[in-house]
Image 1: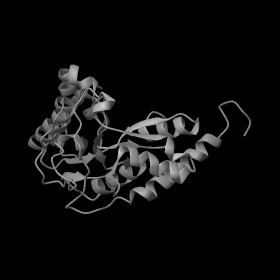
Image 2: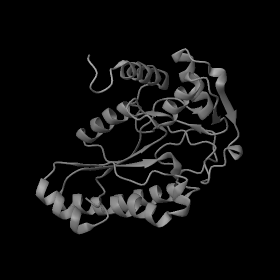
Image 3: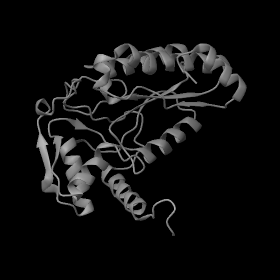
Image 4: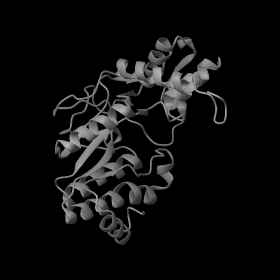
Length: 255
């Protein structure tokens, strides 16, 4: 289904008759968005707006996701829900616009701002790639001047579903409780995994040549209530799940 096509959305929702809609579609390539802003806006802002209008028509809940990149990073205190967005890149602008469009079309929608995903099933997230590199004895470069709130995907899923079934609406911040640089995040996981944390090379943002501007500080907090576990606990569970998955036999091999 093309979420930016009103006819396609209406046909699908009318046929399925859902009791709620959770939108996990979107344009996620932050650096590519700098040269592809029209498509990014279509998938991240126009599409959720179409879903919001359709869900409002049907009188059903909608959950959609936003990002810490709606903020400009000109602070040293974690952002809360009432802080004013000031995005510094195309991706952030698409998410800020999405928030406004969705709430205008469906004031009872739930918008979850979150940050820096990591999870055991995604082999391409930052933490998985960092651990793979240092586990093989290779150095790994990461920003030591960007502060974020890493978010463990299973915790995000459970917290989002809890909020949705409880009837929560409006903006909520969901991230695991802590604020770290990308480099320190990788070092924390390496230490817990018993891997050489000295292979994590802290770099300046400028040296990483990222096309899209990144806020120097985009950690999230909540003035509505903390419902996510601490980051250290999430990393421990990530490592346990990752180890279990690495120990499983390949497809077709005997158990």
